[in-house]
Structures are given as C-alpha cells and as structure tokens.
Image (cartoon, rainbow over all chains, first blue to last red; front, side, top):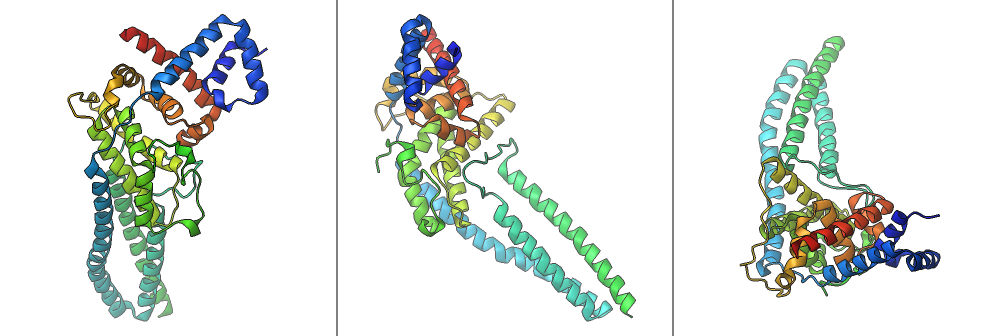
Amino acid sequence: MIAHAQFRRMMACPTELSLTEQVRLNRHLDSCLDCRSAAALMTENRSQLRSLGRLRPPPEHREAILAAADRSQEVASQLLPIVFAFLIVPLSLVSIALVMNYGWTALAGIIAFIVLFGAATVWHASRIGGISELPLRPERSSAVPALIRTLAVDVGGMIGGIVVLVGAVALVSLLARAVR
Amino acid sequence: VDPNQGLADGAYSSVRPQSEVADPASELTSLLDHYHQAVFNFLTVLLGNRDAARDCTQDTFLRTYENLRKGKPVNVYWLYRVARNRATDILRLNRREHLTVERLDESQPDSAGSWFQSDRVRDTLLKLSPPDREVLYLAEVDGLTSLEIGRMLGIRPGTVRMRLTRAHVRFRKSYAEQS
C-alpha cells in the first residue's frame, strides 16, 4: 500500500510518471478526497506560477557582460608579464648569488625548481575557478568571497613556494658540498 | 532564440563534444542569446532584488567565460548551478550582516509588462524560503524535471519531488493568507 505522501510526491511531477504510476495515482485519487484536493491545489499553483510574466534584463546588461568578459581577458594577459617581471628580478639575483657560491650544480637545481614550480602553477591555475566534471558534481558554495579565497590560495602558494625554494637551496648546497 | 523556450530543449541541455565548442567569445554570445533572460529571471526570483540579480547574472556569465577560456564546455545545468551558488552566497552574506533582501521595487518600469500584473503570485513566491522558491520556480516556471533539478542542486530526484510537494503546500498557504 503506497502512503498518501508518496502519491503527493507523484502529483508534484505528473509529467514524469510512467503509465502504471499514472493509473495507480488516478485510482487513488478516485477514492481519496484529501489527495484529490491536494492535486487541485497543485494544479492551481501551477497555472498561477506559469502565468508569471518574465522580466527582461536591461538592454545594456548584455553589452556590459560582453565588455566585462573582454576586460577580464585583457587584465589576465596584462597581469602575467607584470608578475613575471617582478619575479624575474629576485630569481635572477638569487641565481647569480648561488652560481657564484656553489657553481653550476646550484644553477641546475634552480632551473629544475623553476620548471617544477611553473608546472605546479599551471596545473593549479587550470583547476582554480573551474569545474572539470559536468554536471553531476555539485559546486560547493561558500560564504567566503571569491576574491579572498583566491588571495588565500595565492598567499598559501607563495609561502609554500618560499619553503620549497629554501629547501631546494639547502639541498643543492648540501649536494654541492658533498661533491666538493 | 525564444527566451521562454524550455531550458532543457536548448543547444546546451547536454555537454557538447569539445570539437563542437566554438571560440569562448562566440560561445558566450550564444549562451547569452539562449539563457540571459532565463538566468536573470531565476536570480530575480531567488534574490528578490533586481540590482543584485543583475550583478549576479553578470558574475555567472563571467565565470562561464572563464571556464570556456580554459577549454571546458558548459551546459545549462552548470550555468544554473553557478547562478544559484552565487545567489546563495549573497543571501548568506545578507543574513549574516542582518540585511534584509530588498523587495522588487514596483515603481520601476517593467519592460516585460506582465510581471507586475501577477503581483500576488510574485509576492507569495518571494515570501517562501529560498530553497522552496528555487525548486518551485525551476519546476513550474522553467519546466524542468526532478532529474534535471536534482542535477543542478546536487540532490536526488526523490528529494526534489519531496521538496516540491512541500513547497506547493507552503505556496498555497501563503497565498491564502494574503487574501
């Protein structure tokens, strides 16, 4: 015996019912006054909700979105060289100092580190802000604004990078001493 | 493109193969053609505030563009899920800061013409909780199935049907209270 609640769930989505379910529901409705009035209520709700007019977004909104999309691309392409420009100076100084102190082994270590760090950054960037699996994985919603989340990830990445850099330098210097 | 066509009938109802995906800019334009109005209306109902809905719609499409630029295809469910999550963030933020969500300003001219003719239905809808509102809107206004809504919200179709049943009862009760 199917409970009334289950019949009401069936009434909520009448177009999704199989033929057997439809027959079973109709039979129940013939004999149950409560469910019949619930069905009438849903039908009335449905017709009222479908009569709701659609708001038209402001005409300039579409253009604003397209312009913002263009700007976001420009900002991304402008930011990258600036970030690299700022990174390249300290990295070059560190490289020169290490090469002068520890020779070519240190340089090889630095190059390996930069390649690994770059690959990790590219991998991380491809994951941030995107959902690779469609459409079953629900996106997590968070109260923390996206900007703060991104900054937190970046700062965390920077601290991690510094730790790895210091570790790599220490390792290279140890190896260089061992070779000597 | 008919903005009132069923959401699931459009070109973006399923994930298209990567080979069929055009360049991100034209893909964004096409998505705007198909779903700009639908997403805007969904967010207006969810947030009860046209300005917030406008910002949220823009945010949703920019995020979509970001995704397209990374070579990841999107579909309508993904789009709605992003829109809904952005709206949830805004609603949560408003609640935490003890701000009330502004109701639709009836003095604003309505280009569609008919929205404000159904004042009572709209007010009733806005009085429901956001989960009731979204499930009722998606099922009865946008005409999505419980499976499709489940995909969007990350819940099972059975749960969607249960929520929808409750939302119908609450809608009727609230509607009756207004009269």
